[in-house]
Structure formats: C-alpha cells, structure tokens
Image (tube, rainbow, N blue to C red):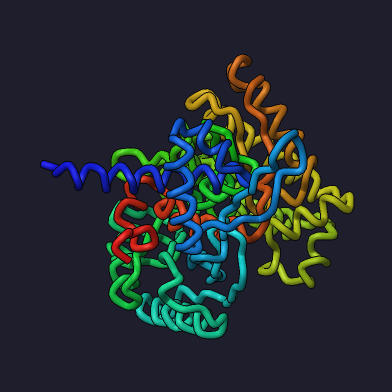
Length: 413
C-alpha cells in the first residue's frame, strides 16, 4: 500500500508529467492557460513550472502579445535539455542520428551496410558509430535519454530480432546487446512502425488518431496507428501488407505464396519488371540513367525516368500504382483510417503513381471508407526512419508512467 506521503509524491510526479507534456504539445503557453486546461490551481502550476525550469526542461520565452491587462509569461519545452539516439539499420545503408526532444535531427552519420559481413561485424560497426557520433557531437551521455533502433523484419517486445530475412539473422537480442554496451534504455522496433511513429509525432500524422503508414522499399510493410497508439498485435507481427495477395496468377513470393503485393510492387519487383522489358528489347531512358548497367536499376531511377516522360517508366509506374492501390484498398477496408501515408522511392514519381493508386482505391475500397481516407506521400523525407527510431525513445520519455520513474524528473536529485 502507498503511504499518504507516497501518494502525494506520486500525484506530484503525475502532475509534473502532465504539465511537461502540455507545454510540449501546446507551446508557447502561459501558466494561466495551463491551470485552465489541467484544472490545477495556479499555485500548484507555478510550483511545478518553477521546478521544471530549475531542471532545465522548460524555459520562459517572452510575454503574450495580445489581450488586456497584465501580460502573461509564455513557456516552451527546452528541446535541447535531453537527446535521443536514433538508428536506421537498413539492408543497404545505416544511419545513426542524435535528435533533440522534439525529434529534430542535430547530427547524423550514414554508412553502407554489407549484410554479407555477418552479424558480429555489423553490430560492432554500429556500436563504434554510436560511440563516435556522441564523442564528435560533444554531448554528455547523461543528456541522452536512450537509443531507438528501427530495423527490418519481425521484432518482439523485448527488442529481439526474431526473423530478419535480408540480414539472415534469427533471435538476435540487439536491444540487450546495446543496453549492456551503453547502459541506457534501448528500444527496438520494425522500421515501418518507426516511420509511422515519426509521422504521428512530428509529421502529417500529428493529431490523427487512426492512420496507416505504408513503406514501399526492398519489401512492403505497414505501420498502423489506432486510437493514437502504435498497434503491434499479439506477437508484434502486424502490418505485413506486402504478403497479402493482389494477383493469384502472379510470380512466387519468398514467403511461398503467389502474387503477393511485395513481389508485384516493391522496389526490387519494379526493377525486375523493367530489366525483363529491356532484355526483351524495349528502349528506355531508364537504361541510360542506370549508366547502362541493369544491376543499377532501382525504383528511384524508374520514377525519375517516368517523370521525364519515358514510356516504359510511365507504364511501370501506372501498373505499380494499381497494385499498390489494391493493397491500400484492403487496408482501408480493414482499418477505416482517416489517413494513409505512402513512403519509399516510388513516391518520387508523384501523381504518376498516386493517380492510378487512388483510382484503384476508389474502385476497390468501400465507398464510405474511401471517402474519408486521405492518401498522401511521406512528409519527413529520407530521415523519416531515423526520426522514428529516436521517437521510440521520446514517446517513452513523455509517457506518464515513464516520467514518474525518470531521473530527469526525480525530485530526489
């Protein structure tokens, strides 16, 4: 049981957390407005605000510019008080970044990933890079709230990479490995979940309670936000939209089924269809943009050629858009989202892929659901995944239950 003193301390920490989150979400905001919104007394609000200022978590930024009477002092989050490390562990490239408390990338390091090097060398390189970026940026480890890692494949709630096909890893406890090395909290999640979280916290998904993020890359996956929370399912295996069937007579997928969305519309699938056409004699700007090397053909190059009017590129983008639209329609019918965000290299084709995609959605999704589902491209660009990785840390930091036990707000310090 809680003692009376324990209860009071718990309430105090909860109130601190509530006010900190309110300032983060509503800044600039005055003490009076905080009191109105939270229903806490002005004296309680003033006491907590003074405490948060002392802890360097918030700061005063000036006076209100409107209204009559005495002008109120405005408050905002001191986003530089603490930081998060985000890791985008990709099959081709890895990015390590340091962000502030609002997900702004302050510095980053990119380097190529060689999956053939093996697990130990890849993790060793990652550890070395994290050490180097912290040292080079000149930040103290006490100011880093944690490390977030976004990686492909199936990852459980303990940060164990259960299956990572492109790496060839199984049951790899990456979270525990990094935690033992750096002695700070580590959070590991699927890369598309991280992208969805990034858009929810800092992009076009802000304020949207129900939306789906679909990434079209080496594979195709989805991150799902339901009622303002990232949905993981019972076994952390949600969002495998790439392995839903869109063509029963299509080519065989790595999962064993035929005509999966991933084998019809992913980056490698797009490249494969283009290569086949060129080998069969079709002339295309794509070949020139790839420096006449078929192995260099990618979804980005196909998108670039399509935007320059290349016939093959246009046909491939239209076909891909139709396949993606079928997959998106399935998602809309299942989840009835307010928003669908599409990420990946194909988005560079713009309307050339979004128009056939939207037409397929209108044709295949329930009309009521399709009307409310806005479909847009990713808003955070290439940094979306690494920002999402950092957001894995930041969302935990701002959770009430997390803040209650956080040393950043511990009244004993």
